[in-house]
Length: 114
Length: 113
Image (tube, rainbow over all chains, first blue to last red; front, side, top):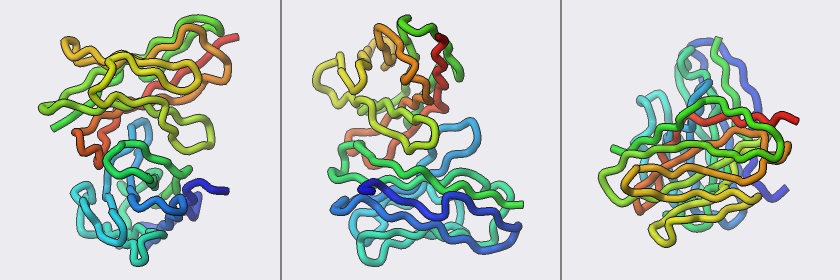
């Protein structure tokens, strides 16, 4: 399809392990966003890319979290030394018009840390 | 800092009845305001947005919202609920750069036949 694609849809891992979550945005969308949604909460901003560069990473909770977008398309969110509190749905969104607030979201990657 | 409060985590209405989902915001600068909807097993979709033009904003699927600065509110309404409106609805606020949306906790709407 032509929407935002996220893989894996579900990931179960053990505390302390390393995890990568992938996002493939809509073709031509230069802006890409990562949000995190905990149970019973709304999405919480993590990081925003404009092209290849992270324009705003103020939402990353600590230095265990890192995201890249090396070619300005696909992005990977990387979590080191996972903790049980990292369990959440990680949402990726892209936008054709940065600054419009018109985001197209993927279905999310559900991360469970045991 | 900006924030959003959605009153009522669950709202239930009968098919054909008025839908009213409440959202109040806090912002130190003129805000942009949004409603997003999440249907089961789908990603969030933009319903409508306010960006300082008309205070009454019309969105998709018959929904509309009114920006009331004096009440710091942006409530979402629909005159007649359909079964297909059952979903989770999120209100969000940003500054006028709109690069970082701050979401409320969501309201789950249930439609009774």
